[in-house]
Figure (cartoon, rainbow, N blue to C red):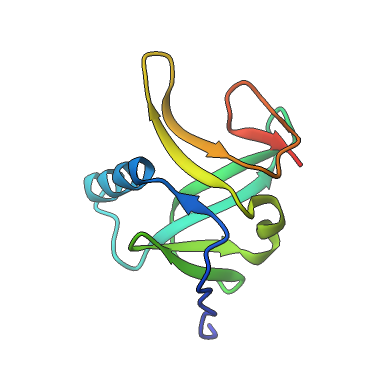
Length: 117
């Protein structure tokens, strides 16, 4: 594997509340230090694309950056769909979980995990 390119300006944001939950999950699931947070998209869902958010090892196509002390992997090809996106965590009576605030989305579904760009 070639040495990763480290991007100094992250194309996405992670809010403090989302980071707190990610760190909690990382600790509860004993995720090793070799894993970073993968943020991306894949085809599917009711609006065309669904978000990817989870811990993974670095792949050759990844751009690597650090957000609030967390190593983040983003496949370069996914950047066009995610630049400017904010990952947040909502804790409420009707909605609890990660929320993706994506300025590139032209349409989203009711669940908030699927979008069209």
